[in-house]
Amino acid sequence: MAGSGWGRRTILAGFALVIGAIAGAGGTGALAAAEARRPAALADGGNDCTCSDFVTGGGWITGTPTGARGNFGVGGGLKDGALWGHLLYIDHDSKIRVKGTEVTGYEVVDDETRRISGNCTINGQGGHTYVVEVADHEDAVPGYTFSISLDTDYSAKGELGGGYIAIHEQKH
Image (cartoon, rainbow, N blue to C red; front, side, top):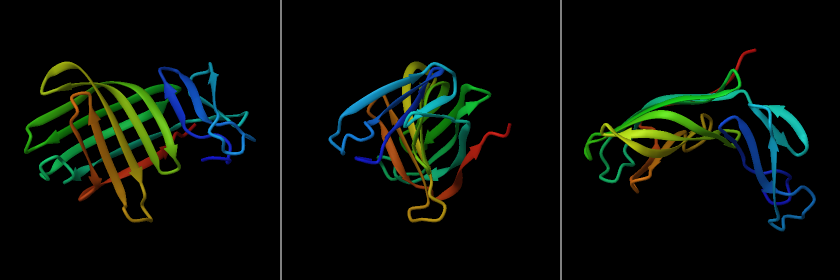
């Protein structure tokens, strides 16, 4: 987003952290960070805006390490000013079952893409972390996409073979 103002926006445990090109820096890659101490607020080019969206989805991909089907159900974002979410992912061939236990971050990557991070169990063993990225490219190719990365170096990603991803605006 060089030269276009602010870049990535991340929500972490109740406050917003905005990282991107400094407005007017001419795309030099200079970085700035701004914190908004209010839960669920994003600083966006000096203007406050309320980030009140969340994402839900479910389906399957074949972008697993073996090419087998991986099923998932995911949700995350901000509801009532707090981080919220869930994750269940199963790689049937590798026999990996991931269950989210806590959402620790929510990032607005772009208008159609969200990144959720958190803590999880893998095959019932706690102490792990995950990052999931989902995209609602309903009117484009690829359409809906899902990716997961675990702290064990496992990762899978792909276009949905079936299912749906939706970004929702919270109703006030």
